[in-house]
Image (cartoon, rainbow, N blue to C red):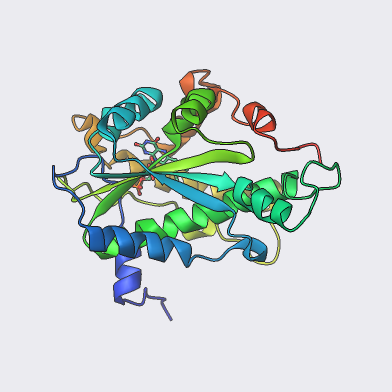
Length: 263
Ligand SMILES: Cc1cc2nc3c(=O)[nH]c(=O)nc-3n(C[C@H](O)[C@H](O)[C@H](O)COP(=O)(O)O)c2cc1C
């Protein structure tokens, strides 16, 4: 019996999602903004700490500076632009208001566990917003490139102690129609009960990888529309040795932001 993908509006929105990097020069209306932000707030949150915030960037000068930090011009042209941050600043204020000593060594909301869970919360909220945006006919691109220069980003957005930037999200009406990017065979990414040992699945792994290399090499990224993208293996190999701009450590400044990643 062969499997098939069940179609419904949510599944269809998710399966047709692709990053949009060129937007129509049209503002996103207030009701849409309210809808997207409310959807993001309804994402799951670890221990219900709600430990993320998002900066809505509307000032063209700030957008331009973000584009500079990210080395991507389209950041400046995004009609709606957010920077999601993990946020234990607000919770520290709340706890301090209840008499908790938030500077004590035993204070837990600055721990590495909370840092990583707060990051998860921020990503889930961003993803909910992204999905809703596509559902409303908009397009998005997630922006990890803003972390190229974390200290500059912290300064620009005046991020207080116990916050840390996670990702940007640019949203607008699409002014391009890129192909949906192929994904690797499901068997390469989903395992049953345990992660298979390399020597258990080596032949199947290499065969699946070769097939995916071929498939991806037929895909055109509109950023370099005159040639197909490299095979997946070549992309992984190139990223693995690249010592360029995207390889600055992102964790060290977080300790300066008041987190205690050693505990
Ligand atoms: C964590 C994360 C960071 C990303 N950062 C950037 C970015 O800085 N600039 C960009 O153009 N795309 C960025 N992307 C988009 C990816 O390049 C894109 O999702 C991937 O190539 C798959 O293509 P698709 O989204 O069209 O399916 C990012 C995606 C994720 C999940």
